[in-house]
Image 1 (cartoon, rainbow, N blue to C red):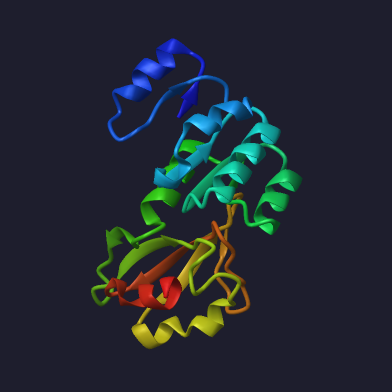
Image 2: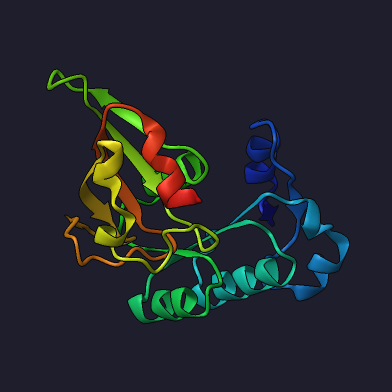
Length: 189
């Protein structure tokens, strides 16, 4: 985290596995002092879309594997997605919860509830740009072969029904009904 405010830095430093730097995220000279190749996740969450865009671009340039940005303008978020700079989350989505969901489900399916219907569970999995399912239609994944049934998709802005012709993009969080997480290999590869 790059943070100017000393009070916020103090809180962030106590969180655990967070690298905190004093400074301004818009100051590009600060990135020369960071070994971004050792960073796993960059979350660009300033109040300025252009700064978040810049941070994601720098992170992509240094191959940071997980890049998430918060954007107010849907058009900027669309450009971020089209340029594959990272996963855009459009405000006023419930930002903290959405970012937590994306981070927790980007590498493994997150089980939400056990359902009494034939031992099915509700899983959430977020697609990232390197995944097998990126830019594929749901029907092409043949998830039903694994006993998995896509229900809904959170596209960074809204929750929509998962239809067979829905294309999965980086940042899409797919909610799936399944007995286990074996379907993950068809999404992650």
